Image (cartoon, rainbow, N blue to C red; front, side, top):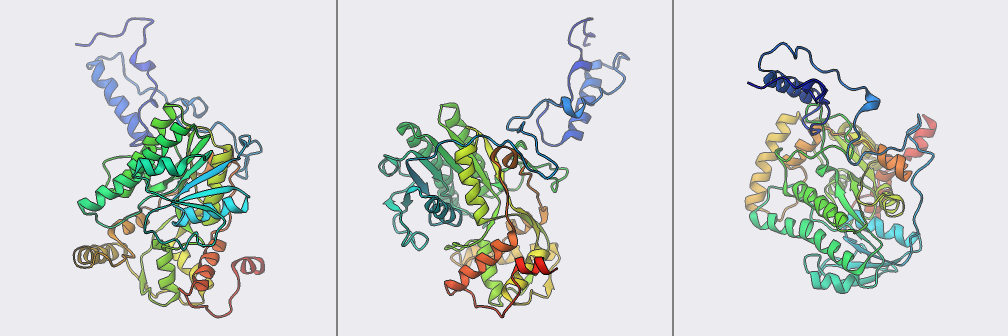
Length: 436
Protein backbone atom coordinates (compact mmCIF):
# COMPACT_ATOMS: atom_id res chain seq x y z
CA UNK A 1 0.00 0.00 0.00
CA UNK A 2 1.29 3.46 -0.94
CA UNK A 3 1.92 5.65 2.09
CA UNK A 4 0.58 9.18 2.28
CA UNK A 5 3.22 11.81 1.52
CA UNK A 6 4.81 13.31 4.57
CA UNK A 7 3.87 16.81 5.62
CA UNK A 8 5.84 19.44 3.74
CA UNK A 9 6.77 17.12 0.87
CA UNK A 10 5.44 17.30 -2.67
CA UNK A 11 2.02 15.68 -2.44
CA UNK A 12 -0.02 14.47 -5.38
CA UNK A 13 -2.40 17.38 -4.85
CA UNK A 14 0.54 19.65 -5.70
CA UNK A 15 1.13 18.18 -9.15
CA UNK A 16 -0.18 20.57 -11.86
CA UNK A 17 -2.71 19.15 -14.25
CA UNK A 18 -1.27 20.72 -17.36
CA UNK A 19 2.21 19.19 -17.52
CA UNK A 20 1.18 16.21 -19.63
CA UNK A 21 1.67 16.11 -23.38
CA UNK A 22 -0.77 18.26 -25.35
CA UNK A 23 -2.55 15.34 -27.05
CA UNK A 24 -5.26 14.17 -26.70
CA UNK A 25 -6.52 17.38 -25.09
CA UNK A 26 -6.84 19.24 -21.81
CA UNK A 27 -10.03 17.54 -20.75
CA UNK A 28 -8.46 14.11 -21.23
CA UNK A 29 -5.43 15.18 -19.23
CA UNK A 30 -7.58 16.26 -16.26
CA UNK A 31 -9.52 12.99 -16.31
CA UNK A 32 -6.33 10.94 -16.51
CA UNK A 33 -4.80 12.97 -13.68
CA UNK A 34 -7.84 12.43 -11.43
CA UNK A 35 -7.80 8.69 -12.11
CA UNK A 36 -4.07 8.52 -11.39
CA UNK A 37 -4.45 10.35 -8.08
CA UNK A 38 -7.31 8.07 -7.03
CA UNK A 39 -5.20 5.02 -7.85
CA UNK A 40 -2.22 6.23 -5.83
CA UNK A 41 -4.45 7.16 -2.93
CA UNK A 42 -5.24 3.49 -2.46
CA UNK A 43 -8.84 4.30 -1.60
CA UNK A 44 -7.90 6.51 1.38
CA UNK A 45 -9.88 9.64 2.11
CA UNK A 46 -6.85 11.98 2.13
CA UNK A 47 -7.45 12.68 -1.58
CA UNK A 48 -11.11 13.38 -2.26
CA UNK A 49 -11.29 16.25 -4.76
CA UNK A 50 -9.83 16.97 -8.17
CA UNK A 51 -7.10 19.64 -8.10
CA UNK A 52 -8.24 23.02 -9.41
CA UNK A 53 -7.00 23.93 -12.88
CA UNK A 54 -4.40 26.71 -12.79
CA UNK A 55 -5.53 30.10 -13.98
CA UNK A 56 -5.06 30.84 -17.66
CA UNK A 57 -2.27 33.32 -16.99
CA UNK A 58 -0.42 30.81 -14.86
CA UNK A 59 -0.21 28.08 -17.51
CA UNK A 60 3.27 26.72 -18.06
CA UNK A 61 4.50 28.05 -21.45
CA UNK A 62 4.57 25.47 -24.23
CA UNK A 63 7.65 24.89 -26.34
CA UNK A 64 7.49 27.03 -29.48
CA UNK A 65 4.94 29.44 -28.00
CA UNK A 66 5.28 33.16 -28.71
CA UNK A 67 5.32 35.67 -25.87
CA UNK A 68 4.75 38.69 -28.15
CA UNK A 69 1.21 40.06 -27.58
CA UNK A 70 -1.26 40.85 -30.35
CA UNK A 71 -3.69 43.75 -30.34
CA UNK A 72 -7.45 43.48 -30.89
CA UNK A 73 -6.90 43.43 -34.65
CA UNK A 74 -4.53 40.46 -34.51
CA UNK A 75 -1.48 42.61 -35.21
CA UNK A 76 1.75 43.31 -33.35
CA UNK A 77 3.42 46.66 -33.01
CA UNK A 78 6.74 45.10 -32.03
CA UNK A 79 7.76 42.20 -34.30
CA UNK A 80 11.27 40.80 -34.08
CA UNK A 81 13.99 43.08 -35.41
CA UNK A 82 15.03 42.40 -39.00
CA UNK A 83 18.43 40.80 -39.58
CA UNK A 84 20.87 41.74 -42.30
CA UNK A 85 20.13 39.82 -45.49
CA UNK A 86 22.98 39.81 -47.99
CA UNK A 87 25.14 37.48 -50.04
CA UNK A 88 24.19 34.79 -52.54
CA UNK A 89 20.99 32.86 -51.77
CA UNK A 90 20.62 29.15 -52.54
CA UNK A 91 17.15 27.76 -53.38
CA UNK A 92 15.96 24.18 -53.85
CA UNK A 93 12.57 23.31 -55.31
CA UNK A 94 12.51 26.36 -57.59
CA UNK A 95 10.43 24.54 -60.22
CA UNK A 96 7.59 23.87 -57.76
CA UNK A 97 4.74 26.17 -56.86
CA UNK A 98 6.15 27.57 -53.61
CA UNK A 99 9.73 27.63 -54.86
CA UNK A 100 8.85 29.48 -58.07
CA UNK A 101 7.16 32.23 -56.06
CA UNK A 102 9.99 32.40 -53.51
CA UNK A 103 12.52 32.83 -56.33
CA UNK A 104 10.50 35.62 -57.94
CA UNK A 105 10.18 37.40 -54.61
CA UNK A 106 13.95 37.16 -54.09
CA UNK A 107 14.55 38.59 -57.56
CA UNK A 108 12.08 41.43 -56.89
CA UNK A 109 14.02 42.20 -53.70
CA UNK A 110 17.27 42.41 -55.67
CA UNK A 111 18.85 39.23 -54.29
CA UNK A 112 21.63 37.25 -55.94
CA UNK A 113 19.98 33.84 -56.44
CA UNK A 114 21.33 30.39 -57.27
CA UNK A 115 18.79 27.61 -57.87
CA UNK A 116 19.30 23.86 -57.81
CA UNK A 117 17.79 22.00 -60.75
CA UNK A 118 17.39 18.24 -60.70
CA UNK A 119 18.84 16.51 -63.77
CA UNK A 120 16.17 16.22 -66.45
CA UNK A 121 13.68 18.46 -64.61
CA UNK A 122 11.36 20.81 -66.48
CA UNK A 123 12.72 24.33 -66.21
CA UNK A 124 9.70 26.37 -67.33
CA UNK A 125 9.40 27.89 -63.84
CA UNK A 126 12.85 29.51 -64.02
CA UNK A 127 13.41 29.98 -67.75
CA UNK A 128 14.38 33.56 -68.52
CA UNK A 129 14.85 34.56 -64.90
CA UNK A 130 18.05 36.37 -63.82
CA UNK A 131 19.27 33.52 -61.63
CA UNK A 132 22.27 31.22 -61.59
CA UNK A 133 21.31 27.59 -62.19
CA UNK A 134 23.25 24.54 -61.06
CA UNK A 135 22.42 20.88 -61.61
CA UNK A 136 22.27 18.58 -58.62
CA UNK A 137 20.15 16.37 -56.40
CA UNK A 138 19.32 16.86 -52.72
CA UNK A 139 19.88 13.13 -52.20
CA UNK A 140 23.46 13.46 -53.51
CA UNK A 141 25.64 15.05 -50.83
CA UNK A 142 28.57 15.68 -53.19
CA UNK A 143 26.42 17.55 -55.73
CA UNK A 144 24.93 19.65 -52.94
CA UNK A 145 28.36 20.58 -51.64
CA UNK A 146 29.34 21.85 -55.07
CA UNK A 147 26.02 23.66 -55.56
CA UNK A 148 25.90 25.40 -52.17
CA UNK A 149 29.52 26.54 -52.03
CA UNK A 150 29.77 30.32 -51.80
CA UNK A 151 26.16 30.88 -50.68
CA UNK A 152 25.36 32.72 -47.44
CA UNK A 153 21.72 31.68 -46.98
CA UNK A 154 19.39 28.97 -48.24
CA UNK A 155 15.71 28.26 -48.77
CA UNK A 156 15.13 24.51 -48.85
CA UNK A 157 11.75 24.16 -50.54
CA UNK A 158 12.18 20.93 -52.52
CA UNK A 159 9.90 18.03 -51.60
CA UNK A 160 7.87 15.27 -53.20
CA UNK A 161 4.16 15.85 -52.56
CA UNK A 162 1.92 12.84 -52.95
CA UNK A 163 -1.59 11.99 -51.71
CA UNK A 164 -1.96 8.72 -53.63
CA UNK A 165 -1.64 5.26 -52.11
CA UNK A 166 2.11 4.64 -52.28
CA UNK A 167 4.10 1.67 -53.44
CA UNK A 168 7.25 0.70 -51.50
CA UNK A 169 9.29 2.34 -54.25
CA UNK A 170 7.33 5.59 -53.94
CA UNK A 171 7.64 5.50 -50.16
CA UNK A 172 11.40 5.14 -50.44
CA UNK A 173 11.72 7.98 -52.92
CA UNK A 174 9.55 10.29 -50.80
CA UNK A 175 11.64 9.48 -47.71
CA UNK A 176 14.94 9.96 -49.53
CA UNK A 177 13.99 13.38 -50.91
CA UNK A 178 11.92 14.80 -48.07
CA UNK A 179 13.91 13.53 -45.09
CA UNK A 180 17.41 12.63 -46.20
CA UNK A 181 17.43 15.50 -48.69
CA UNK A 182 16.63 17.91 -45.87
CA UNK A 183 19.34 16.37 -43.71
CA UNK A 184 21.84 16.74 -46.56
CA UNK A 185 21.03 20.41 -47.15
CA UNK A 186 21.39 21.15 -43.44
CA UNK A 187 24.67 19.23 -43.19
CA UNK A 188 26.21 21.14 -46.07
CA UNK A 189 24.92 24.44 -44.70
CA UNK A 190 26.53 23.68 -41.34
CA UNK A 191 29.76 22.66 -43.08
CA UNK A 192 29.96 25.98 -44.93
CA UNK A 193 28.88 28.04 -41.92
CA UNK A 194 25.86 29.52 -43.70
CA UNK A 195 24.09 32.36 -41.90
CA UNK A 196 20.61 30.82 -41.98
CA UNK A 197 18.50 28.13 -43.66
CA UNK A 198 14.71 28.38 -44.01
CA UNK A 199 13.07 24.99 -44.55
CA UNK A 200 9.58 24.71 -46.00
CA UNK A 201 7.20 22.42 -44.14
CA UNK A 202 3.51 21.54 -44.42
CA UNK A 203 0.47 22.09 -42.23
CA UNK A 204 -0.25 18.39 -42.69
CA UNK A 205 2.76 17.78 -40.41
CA UNK A 206 1.35 20.03 -37.70
CA UNK A 207 -0.53 18.59 -34.74
CA UNK A 208 -4.12 19.44 -33.84
CA UNK A 209 -6.70 18.81 -31.13
CA UNK A 210 -8.04 15.34 -31.94
CA UNK A 211 -11.16 15.96 -29.83
CA UNK A 212 -11.88 19.19 -31.71
CA UNK A 213 -10.14 18.94 -35.11
CA UNK A 214 -11.63 22.24 -36.28
CA UNK A 215 -10.13 24.21 -33.39
CA UNK A 216 -7.30 26.49 -34.65
CA UNK A 217 -3.93 24.77 -34.23
CA UNK A 218 -0.64 26.58 -33.75
CA UNK A 219 3.00 25.49 -33.74
CA UNK A 220 2.79 24.04 -30.22
CA UNK A 221 0.45 21.17 -31.11
CA UNK A 222 2.24 17.83 -31.14
CA UNK A 223 1.80 15.62 -34.18
CA UNK A 224 -0.13 12.43 -33.35
CA UNK A 225 1.73 9.54 -35.05
CA UNK A 226 -1.04 6.93 -35.00
CA UNK A 227 -3.48 8.65 -37.36
CA UNK A 228 -3.94 7.41 -40.91
CA UNK A 229 -1.23 9.40 -42.67
CA UNK A 230 0.38 9.36 -46.08
CA UNK A 231 4.16 9.21 -46.55
CA UNK A 232 4.29 12.93 -47.41
CA UNK A 233 2.94 13.97 -44.01
CA UNK A 234 5.08 11.45 -42.14
CA UNK A 235 8.23 12.55 -43.94
CA UNK A 236 7.57 16.25 -43.34
CA UNK A 237 7.33 15.51 -39.60
CA UNK A 238 10.70 13.77 -39.82
CA UNK A 239 12.13 16.64 -41.88
CA UNK A 240 11.16 19.06 -39.11
CA UNK A 241 12.93 16.75 -36.67
CA UNK A 242 16.07 17.00 -38.83
CA UNK A 243 15.82 20.79 -38.54
CA UNK A 244 15.68 20.61 -34.75
CA UNK A 245 18.66 18.24 -34.69
CA UNK A 246 20.63 20.69 -36.82
CA UNK A 247 19.59 23.58 -34.55
CA UNK A 248 20.94 21.70 -31.52
CA UNK A 249 24.24 21.33 -33.39
CA UNK A 250 24.41 25.09 -33.84
CA UNK A 251 22.93 25.68 -37.30
CA UNK A 252 20.63 28.68 -37.62
CA UNK A 253 17.53 27.09 -39.15
CA UNK A 254 13.88 28.23 -39.23
CA UNK A 255 10.83 26.23 -40.35
CA UNK A 256 8.21 27.93 -42.57
CA UNK A 257 4.98 25.91 -42.56
CA UNK A 258 2.73 26.32 -45.57
CA UNK A 259 -0.94 25.50 -46.00
CA UNK A 260 -2.51 24.69 -49.40
CA UNK A 261 -1.18 27.22 -51.92
CA UNK A 262 -3.22 29.20 -54.47
CA UNK A 263 -1.67 31.62 -56.91
CA UNK A 264 0.36 32.09 -60.09
CA UNK A 265 3.52 30.31 -61.33
CA UNK A 266 2.05 26.86 -60.69
CA UNK A 267 3.99 25.07 -63.41
CA UNK A 268 3.64 21.42 -62.37
CA UNK A 269 0.69 22.19 -61.76
CA UNK A 270 -0.36 21.38 -58.21
CA UNK A 271 -3.50 19.40 -57.33
CA UNK A 272 -5.46 22.61 -56.62
CA UNK A 273 -4.09 24.15 -59.80
CA UNK A 274 -5.21 21.18 -61.91
CA UNK A 275 -8.64 21.32 -60.27
CA UNK A 276 -8.99 25.02 -61.12
CA UNK A 277 -7.98 24.29 -64.73
CA UNK A 278 -10.57 21.49 -64.88
CA UNK A 279 -13.20 23.87 -63.48
CA UNK A 280 -12.40 26.56 -66.05
CA UNK A 281 -12.59 24.00 -68.86
CA UNK A 282 -15.91 22.59 -67.69
CA UNK A 283 -14.43 19.23 -66.71
CA UNK A 284 -15.25 19.37 -63.01
CA UNK A 285 -18.58 17.54 -62.78
CA UNK A 286 -19.01 17.36 -59.01
CA UNK A 287 -17.43 18.40 -55.75
CA UNK A 288 -17.50 17.41 -52.11
CA UNK A 289 -18.15 19.85 -49.23
CA UNK A 290 -15.45 20.49 -46.69
CA UNK A 291 -12.68 23.02 -46.32
CA UNK A 292 -9.06 23.72 -45.54
CA UNK A 293 -6.57 26.45 -44.78
CA UNK A 294 -5.27 28.11 -47.93
CA UNK A 295 -2.47 30.57 -48.49
CA UNK A 296 -1.88 32.98 -51.35
CA UNK A 297 1.34 32.32 -53.24
CA UNK A 298 2.53 35.85 -52.50
CA UNK A 299 1.82 35.31 -48.80
CA UNK A 300 3.88 32.13 -48.49
CA UNK A 301 6.73 33.84 -50.37
CA UNK A 302 6.46 36.75 -47.95
CA UNK A 303 6.38 34.29 -45.06
CA UNK A 304 9.68 32.79 -46.20
CA UNK A 305 11.28 36.24 -46.38
CA UNK A 306 10.01 37.09 -42.90
CA UNK A 307 11.28 33.78 -41.53
CA UNK A 308 14.69 34.53 -43.00
CA UNK A 309 14.86 38.08 -41.68
CA UNK A 310 12.87 38.04 -38.43
CA UNK A 311 12.43 34.40 -37.37
CA UNK A 312 13.98 33.06 -34.19
CA UNK A 313 16.57 30.34 -34.76
CA UNK A 314 15.21 26.86 -34.21
CA UNK A 315 11.59 28.01 -34.36
CA UNK A 316 8.63 27.04 -36.54
CA UNK A 317 6.06 29.46 -38.00
CA UNK A 318 2.69 28.58 -39.54
CA UNK A 319 1.55 30.69 -42.50
CA UNK A 320 -1.98 30.83 -43.90
CA UNK A 321 -4.18 33.42 -45.59
CA UNK A 322 -7.46 32.00 -44.25
CA UNK A 323 -9.78 29.01 -44.07
CA UNK A 324 -11.94 28.54 -47.16
CA UNK A 325 -14.84 26.11 -47.45
CA UNK A 326 -15.17 24.22 -50.72
CA UNK A 327 -18.62 25.74 -51.25
CA UNK A 328 -17.08 29.22 -51.03
CA UNK A 329 -14.19 28.13 -53.26
CA UNK A 330 -16.62 26.99 -55.96
CA UNK A 331 -18.42 30.34 -55.80
CA UNK A 332 -15.16 32.29 -56.10
CA UNK A 333 -14.04 30.16 -59.04
CA UNK A 334 -17.39 30.76 -60.72
CA UNK A 335 -16.99 34.53 -60.42
CA UNK A 336 -13.36 34.49 -61.56
CA UNK A 337 -13.67 32.12 -64.54
CA UNK A 338 -17.21 32.94 -65.63
CA UNK A 339 -17.94 29.20 -65.71
CA UNK A 340 -20.81 27.85 -63.58
CA UNK A 341 -19.91 25.66 -60.64
CA UNK A 342 -20.89 21.98 -60.73
CA UNK A 343 -24.49 21.27 -59.79
CA UNK A 344 -23.60 17.95 -58.23
CA UNK A 345 -22.55 18.34 -54.60
CA UNK A 346 -21.75 14.84 -53.41
CA UNK A 347 -22.16 13.79 -49.78
CA UNK A 348 -18.75 13.13 -48.20
CA UNK A 349 -19.40 9.42 -47.65
CA UNK A 350 -20.38 8.97 -51.30
CA UNK A 351 -17.33 10.90 -52.52
CA UNK A 352 -15.07 8.92 -50.20
CA UNK A 353 -16.37 5.69 -51.74
CA UNK A 354 -15.94 7.00 -55.27
CA UNK A 355 -12.40 8.14 -54.47
CA UNK A 356 -11.51 4.73 -53.01
CA UNK A 357 -12.69 2.87 -56.13
CA UNK A 358 -11.17 5.37 -58.57
CA UNK A 359 -7.83 5.45 -56.79
CA UNK A 360 -7.66 1.66 -56.66
CA UNK A 361 -8.06 1.32 -60.43
CA UNK A 362 -5.74 4.24 -61.25
CA UNK A 363 -3.08 3.03 -58.81
CA UNK A 364 -3.09 -0.46 -60.30
CA UNK A 365 -3.92 0.09 -63.98
CA UNK A 366 -3.02 3.71 -64.81
CA UNK A 367 -0.47 4.93 -62.26
CA UNK A 368 0.67 7.80 -64.51
CA UNK A 369 -2.81 9.38 -64.66
CA UNK A 370 -3.06 12.35 -62.23
CA UNK A 371 -5.69 11.85 -59.52
CA UNK A 372 -7.76 14.91 -58.64
CA UNK A 373 -9.50 13.71 -55.47
CA UNK A 374 -7.88 10.83 -53.60
CA UNK A 375 -9.26 9.20 -50.42
CA UNK A 376 -6.63 11.11 -48.45
CA UNK A 377 -7.71 14.41 -50.02
CA UNK A 378 -11.33 13.70 -49.07
CA UNK A 379 -10.29 13.01 -45.46
CA UNK A 380 -8.28 16.23 -45.33
CA UNK A 381 -11.17 18.32 -46.65
CA UNK A 382 -13.60 16.71 -44.23
CA UNK A 383 -11.42 17.38 -41.21
CA UNK A 384 -11.73 21.13 -41.92
CA UNK A 385 -8.64 21.94 -39.89
CA UNK A 386 -7.91 25.55 -39.00
CA UNK A 387 -4.53 27.23 -38.55
CA UNK A 388 -3.58 29.71 -35.86
CA UNK A 389 -1.05 32.14 -37.35
CA UNK A 390 -0.72 34.30 -34.22
CA UNK A 391 2.97 33.52 -33.79
CA UNK A 392 3.87 34.61 -37.33
CA UNK A 393 1.76 37.75 -36.93
CA UNK A 394 3.27 38.65 -33.57
CA UNK A 395 6.93 37.84 -34.10
CA UNK A 396 7.35 38.38 -37.84
CA UNK A 397 4.72 40.99 -38.65
CA UNK A 398 2.99 38.60 -41.08
CA UNK A 399 -0.08 40.16 -42.76
CA UNK A 400 -1.97 37.83 -45.12
CA UNK A 401 -3.64 39.17 -48.25
CA UNK A 402 -6.92 38.20 -49.95
CA UNK A 403 -7.28 34.64 -51.17
CA UNK A 404 -9.72 35.89 -53.84
CA UNK A 405 -6.91 37.88 -55.46
CA UNK A 406 -4.64 34.83 -55.38
CA UNK A 407 -7.28 32.78 -57.24
CA UNK A 408 -7.65 35.53 -59.83
CA UNK A 409 -3.87 35.62 -60.35
CA UNK A 410 -3.71 31.83 -60.62
CA UNK A 411 -6.47 31.79 -63.25
CA UNK A 412 -4.92 34.64 -65.25
CA UNK A 413 -1.60 32.79 -65.25
CA UNK A 414 -3.23 29.58 -66.51
CA UNK A 415 -4.96 31.60 -69.26
CA UNK A 416 -1.64 33.21 -70.23
CA UNK A 417 -0.08 29.76 -70.57
CA UNK A 418 -2.98 28.40 -72.62
CA UNK A 419 -4.23 25.95 -70.00
CA UNK A 420 -7.56 27.67 -69.35
CA UNK A 421 -9.93 29.65 -71.60
CA UNK A 422 -10.54 33.31 -71.00
CA UNK A 423 -14.04 33.61 -69.58
CA UNK A 424 -16.59 36.35 -70.30
CA UNK A 425 -16.24 39.82 -68.81
CA UNK A 426 -16.72 39.66 -65.07
CA UNK A 427 -16.31 41.77 -61.97
CA UNK A 428 -12.86 41.51 -60.43
CA UNK A 429 -13.00 40.34 -56.79
CA UNK A 430 -11.67 43.68 -55.54
CA UNK A 431 -14.30 45.61 -57.53
CA UNK A 432 -17.04 43.26 -56.37
CA UNK A 433 -16.09 43.90 -52.77
CA UNK A 434 -16.05 47.66 -53.32
CA UNK A 435 -19.52 47.71 -54.93
CA UNK A 436 -21.17 45.27 -52.49
